[in-house]
Image 1 (spheres, rainbow, N blue to C red):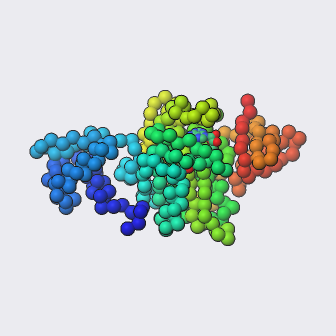
Image 2: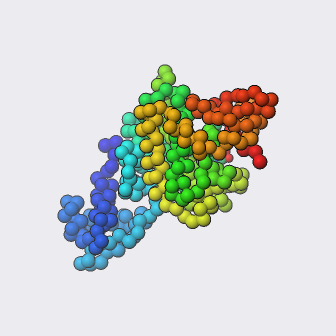
Image 3: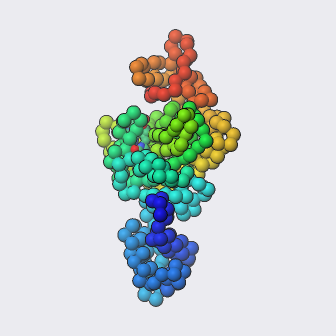
Length: 333
Ligand code: BT5
């Protein structure tokens, strides 16, 4: 049995939840026991375990069990419920706390895990940004998620998948909340000029061919700004802070997976044009005066366009145009 495969215990719990969700009336222990082919005592144990996980299930003698509420925790059962994707999120692993979801998924990818496998954690103790930077991942209100892809693309096209992640998050946030989420080149999602999400793409490749690619998404959902350390607080925000109310993390995750998948299908079939067009309409930087910070320099100019390979074209103060493939951007004024 592979670590990403559903265990018999998980299957039984998913079936119990399915039966309770589908029924307006209480479902008897006897009926569940028959449906699952297990004893009533085992049913009761599963129900107890589900309660501990935050499911509110009432049970009365002779009346049976009734599901009153479900937790907003990205358990695989919750992700799978009404998930409309064909591949992404069909297998999912939930961890209350881990080092980095990208690391967990990389190890599973090496063991042959299937495309679409999702690892999601409630907290990360060594969440990473790019170039060894720290990604703050406190418990409870974030979506710290990694998605495994096995694209037939060349390594040079990997930045397109970071873009795909950012566009999918921005669109999902817009659809779920109506907030004006934008994509900030190269890999952030911002709301009102503040960073709400960062994307970290890591891959394993050989001779220009990608073996697997991991899209790591860090999205501040139901976090208050004061749950983040002071040094990242000012330029950061969360969906909660902008929307003014909590939103379903699980619902948002399902929506992100769906938006990712539809764009991934189009990208694989038709190439990057549609994605790049969409990125242009969602861009937080195009047409703006910006500073571009690369390893060695800080340059000032006007963000003119995003090229087909994902590069940012900037018209510098001296009128010259330059392409940037990596770096940081800060929008001025
Ligand atoms: C990123 O890096 O923005 C990519 C972040 C990716 C995080 C996900 S979570 C799931 C998966 N597992 C991981 O270990 N990582 C991925 P970068 O562009 O380098 O930005 C990092 C900078 O963002 C930091 O130096 C801080 O300034 C800021 N920052 C850190 N935590 C933040 C947070 N929670 N919200 C907003 N900004 C934050």
